[in-house]
Image 1 (cartoon, one colour):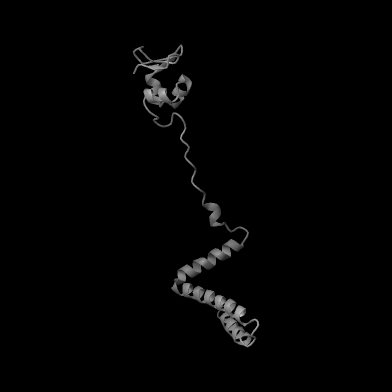
Image 2 (cartoon, rainbow, N blue to C red):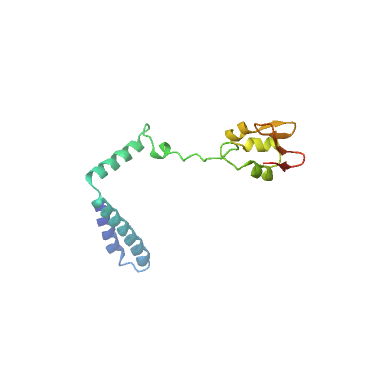
Length: 141
């Protein structure tokens, strides 16, 4: 890389005399020189262990059997809340939102399902008292 910097400087000096291309080439070469300088500054800051590791990774990536780190890192799965897997709300809230017993029971948690039972389009509690009538949309809880 150091030879490249010298070549750039020599080319800039040689091309400096040509007026028609001068400005365009000087800007391009200055940009390349700046990039090379930044690269060497970054390399100076790295420890030998980091440099060795990066060389190893570049070499490993070039081989057929080399495993890319991008393939190993998988995005997190999106958590989709399904009915019945979380507490949506008490019976009154479920009745207000849905009204249909089948939908209401699908949104109930396991505890709520064990507390209520369905018969003839109505929900009854453990004692046998009616807590919801689907036809009249009344909730007695």
